[in-house]
Image 1 (tube, rainbow, N blue to C red):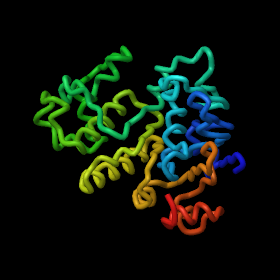
Image 2: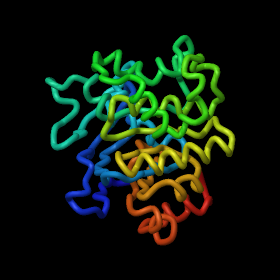
Image 3: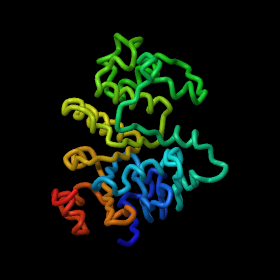
Image 4: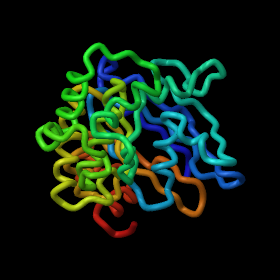
Length: 268
């Protein structure tokens, strides 16, 4: 497969400022991802789809420098935020992760912290001062669709919540630092259908104000929540970007026959 690139069809003023140019990733000698160039529209949901092992989650971790936490990992190419390479020598990775937040596959609230403490924990770690803590906690829990369920027990342990509630608490925690982009790595894979629906509703609401990039194996979920999709595939070599476009087009009239086969469930 040749390296691929995609500029999703969006006006320049709607561009989120996050893009990759010829991005590669390795784990030791294993070339996991090859030549991905993609830019993300602002205030939208972009779904990263493709079979297991094609580099979706690896690509997601490149976008906020989580990739470098993995031993023997390496990358090449550029990841740009408003035109600046986030892997530049003078760039503080922690500052990037405030702007480009991350929600993981398995909910990971801090169990020893209360619900309130979980929400503001990122701010405390980043030494960001808060004028009105109560207002911020309420705002973030509201945006994460959790406020009504927990407003009377903010001092309960974050670990006391259900799995779906814990995931929404993690979303609220990410939102507290006011990211420009929120990355989500299969955020519903461990949740029941009801919790999944609530997370999906939250994602759509968040995209009214910020840019969301979500990895999902669920084609129904991709069609429900994403405005755009990027299809990744590996054919015995590193993962590549096959094509990216508006979700409706990707699911009804894709350019590449491999995309059609995947979204129709013929493999993967």
